[in-house]
Amino acid sequence: MRHSFHAKGTTPFHPLIGPCLACALIACVVEQPAPPPLGTGDAPGGDGDGDGDGDGDVDAGGEAPCEYHFGRTFVLDTLQIMQVGEGFDLNGDGVPDNALGLLGAAANPKLAERIHSGQALYLYDFDAWSDPPTADDPHMRMTVYRGLDADDPEDPSNNLAGQGRFLVPREQFDVTCEPHGAFGDAVLKNRRLEAFAPRWELVFSGIGTVEFHNFYAAVEFHDDFTQMEGWGGGVWPLCSLSRAHFAGGLGGATYLDVIAKGIEIAPDIDLDNDGIERLVGTSKVEGCVDGDGTLIPGSDCPCDPRIQDGFSVAFWGKGPRATITGTSSSTE
Ligand SMILES: [Ca+2]
Ligand SMILES: [Ca+2]
Ligand SMILES: [Ca+2]
Ligand SMILES: [Ca+2]
Image 1 (tube, rainbow, N blue to C red):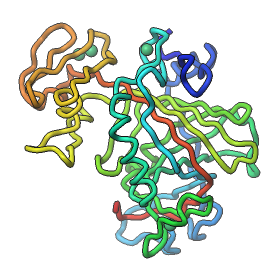
Image 2 (cartoon, rainbow, N blue to C red; image 1 turned 90 degrees about the vertical axis):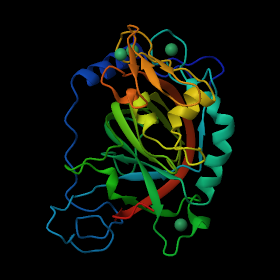
Image 3 (cartoon, rainbow, N blue to C red; image 1 turned 135 degrees about the vertical axis):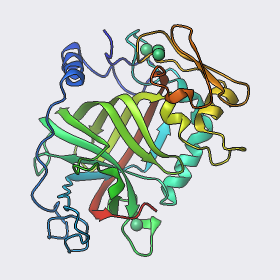
Image 4 (cartoon, rainbow, N blue to C red; image 1 turned 180 degrees about the horizontal axis):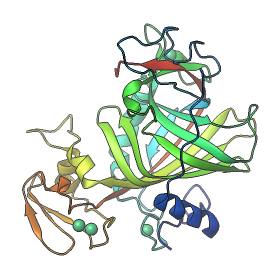
C-alpha cells in the first residue's frame, strides 16, 4: 500500500503504523479535516491579552490580530538527519526511503552546533491535549515551529534544560493565522503520537522556508511527559530545493545544485506518477527530464509544473519541555 509506514530492523523504532491508521492517513490527504478552532486567548503562561505576542498589547497597524494559541511545548536538544536505510516508506515498496541520509555525516555536527548556540531552535507544540497530559488522545494537534530565544539579550545556556522560553516568528503563520507547520489531526496512543501532512513547511536556520510533501511524523513521550523523542520523514521537492541558496556555494549555487550535481544524489520519489524525473547539467542544474522523457531546458526547470518529484529525507530528534511566551515580528 502506498504511504504505509515501514521501518527496517536497524531503525531505532518499531514499524510505525498499522494498516487502519494508514488508511485514515490516506483519507486525510483526500479530505483534509477542518482544523480545530483556534483558542480564544493566550496559552498558559501567555501575556493575557489574547494576541499571544508577549507584549500585552493588541497589535497596531490595522491588521486583524491573530489569536495565536500554544499548548504543551518541547524544544529539540538534538536533531539529526537519519542514516540511509532508516526512515519512512514513502513509495510503498516496503523499504524506508531516505535518499538525503547521505547528507547526515556533514550536516549533523553543524545542526548540533547551531542548536546549542541558539541559532537552530525547533519547537514541537501539542495543542488540544488534556491538562495534565494523558497517554491517549484521538484528536491532538501538533505543530513544529522554528523558535527564537525569548531572553533579551539571548541566553543559549538556559534553552535546553526544560525551562527554555521562546518566541515564534509570525512568518510561520498564513494569512488566516494557521501555522504552516501544523499536522492537523494527530492521534496519541499509549504515549506515541502519529501524524501526517500532505504539505508541511518548516523554516530551517541557514536555508529558509522548506516545503515538504507527504510528511509523516511520530513522537514518543517519556512516562512523565517531560521529554519527547520524534521521527519525521517526507519528500523535499526539487522546486523547493532549487529555491534554497547554499550559503557556502560559489556562483549562487542552490541546495539542489549541491545535492544533485555536487554530491550526485538522484531524486527518488515519483510524486506525479509519471516516472522519476532527472536533472541534467554538469556542476549546476541546467535542465530537467520529465518522467515521460521530455527535456525541459533551463535552470528554473525544477519549478515547471511538469516537474513534481523530490528526494526522500528522514529526521530524528529529542528534547525537553519548553514554553512559548509569544510571537515575534522578527525572524532573527
Ligand atoms: Ca520505500
Ligand atoms: Ca534562552
Ligand atoms: Ca515524476
Ligand atoms: Ca512529471
